[in-house]
Length: 177
Image 1 (cartoon, rainbow, N blue to C red):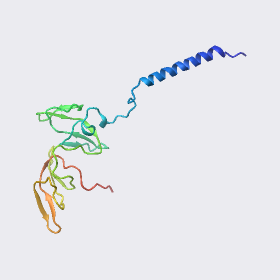
Image 2 (cartoon, rainbow, N blue to C red):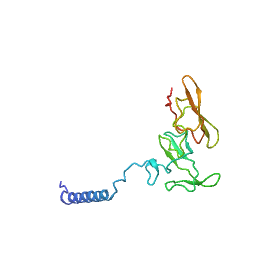
Image 3 (cartoon, helix red, strand yellow):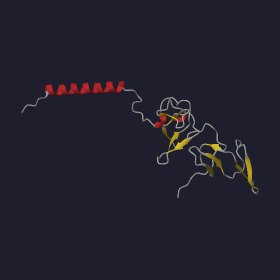
Image 4 (cartoon, rainbow, N blue to C red):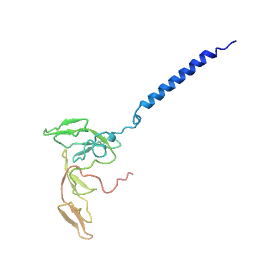
């Protein structure tokens, strides 16, 4: 039996070289960032840390989503350029960016709180609450305008300032059982 060696083998080699050349050309033409993993925080044109806003006073955390995701409910004259879902504010008078941002850290606030952290926050049940920190501390923070002595020995103080917004992070890390 004779094998068909000459013509079939050379055409297979030529075809294989042609396919390899096309693959190399396609790979060279492809941008280097095409395989990059895109995260919600890596959007172009976004604010600090990839957020669609620079800071937020009325931030909301989605309690059912892990890792945490945040939404800013600040009302502004116009939505930031990086905002994907801009809606008119419920009471009118501006717009609210309804984007959710996944982040382990709470977004930065625009108006500084009278305290850096608070374990015992007391807040109203309003849509955007008014909060006070009931922590007893060795000294009130420098940005607290009204401070009262609550215990004499050892001296413990409490900041009586109210903050319109959420109370912020806890001082003592939460430990599960």
